Image (tube, rainbow, N blue to C red):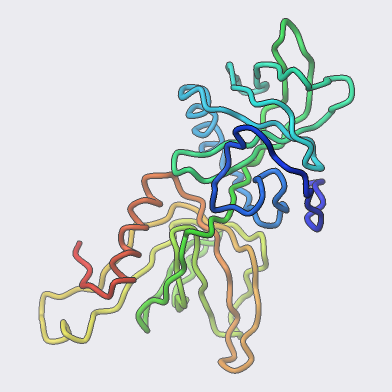
Length: 264
C-alpha cells in the first residue's frame, strides 16, 4: 500500500456519503492500518461477483483520499475491471486508485487497482490482487471461558494449544508460551478451530462434549506483543472468512456474551 497510514483528510462529505453512520469519518479517509488485507483469489472474485450482480454503488478515491463520483462495476475478467466512468475522473492524471464498497455484511472494504484506459465512458483498470477490509468497531470483542483453545495450520504445520483470550466475529487474541515458535505479523493461517471448555455444570454428564465453534477457513496475524507477567507471546488474529461463516460465528459469540449454555 502506498497510502499514508498516518494522514487523514478533514474534508466534508456532502450529499449521500454512502458510509456507516457509526463511522466518524468516511471510509476513504480512514488510515489503511485500520483495514486488514485478504489475499485469497476466491474471496476477491466472490466480492467482485457480488458487486457486479447487485449493481453495488462504488466510491473511487485516489491514494491520498480524494473522492471521485459514485459508480458501478460493469464487468470483469481475470485481467481487467470495466467500471462506469465517473464524470470527474481523469485517466491521464490518475494512474492508481482505490475502489470502496460495502460487502454483504455491510462492512466497508477497498481494492487497489491501476488505471489502464478509458473508452466510450468505460474505465478500464487492472484486476486487484488484494482485498482490504475495515476492522469493524461493532464486532464487539468478548472474553471467553478460561480454557478456550485454538488450533490452526501454519502452512502445513499444525499449531495447537493456543489459549484464546477474547474473540469477535472479526478476529481473536490468542497466547502461546513465549518459548514456542513465533508468528510474526503478516503470517497466514488456515483451518482455525476454537474449542470452548465444558461448563462446570456439565462436568458430571458422561455424554457432554466441549463446544467447537464454526471453523474459520483463513486468518492473518495482524499484531504481536509479549506479556512479561505471564511469559506468553500474544497474537491478534484477523479472520478472513465469507459472510455466512462470520454470521454463524457472530451467533455463537452472542451466546457467549449472554452467558447462556451453548447448543450445537
